[in-house]
Image (tube, rainbow, N blue to C red):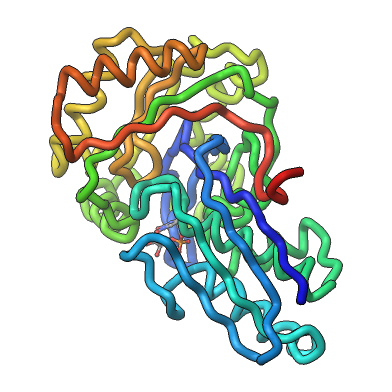
Length: 315
Ligand code: C5P
């Protein structure tokens, strides 16, 4: 029996710009993604029989094919049937710390950990780029979750260019316990409302790239300038989420009033994060906003920016 424990970090979006349509039906994006220390733990062990089973400590996470972690294992089993026959099936246990349907890539990072863990258990010897290619078949954010750190993500979000490490920054995150936003809803609603701003998939690549405005953010990251990064935070999906979910706007305003470096909704939401330059400042902001809003449904986390994606626990 072989087993591995992996740490699967959450991500936040420092930048999310929707450029237009793609021939595959997805949106063409320019994003800056950042791994943070808030993480799930994934324990994977081989079992003697040819089955895949997934269990999660969070009651609302499904154990079937709708779980991205299950889909990651099923994809590898389908691609490498001989390895599964030789080493057996797997049992996957997910210790969930990342809130679900929160815009933090919790499901994607669990799937990324399963790809990395199964590569070890089944001794597949996959390269980073082979792993990322398989990851892109599971979801747009899964390749980034494998690589982690700070990266510019283009295409559907699966084409990655690593950026300068920002591990001097901290973040406070807040989310209402029973509020989730569907990613499909967010993009669909954006398409309905802002379709007239889209650059069409028929435009040549150069024209499409000229539309991207992520340059100043990338430059601020290269200078590791926390204040500038805070000023340049951007997320097009806020345009649909803020009018529909006043709780998101309320959190943003509460963080802003604390004089943080910057605040923004992450991904398709509804988690709101605020950047700070120290852990002490992150904790001060957390306490101040918690006291001000005083709602037991509100959950908070603090985390640090990190420069790694999926890694083995205790290493
Ligand atoms: O790739 P993933 O399955 O995580 O995406 C979830 C949903 O988000 C897609 O079904 C699509 O509706 C939307 N999406 C998109 N364009 C992207 C990424 C995601 O429209 N680049």
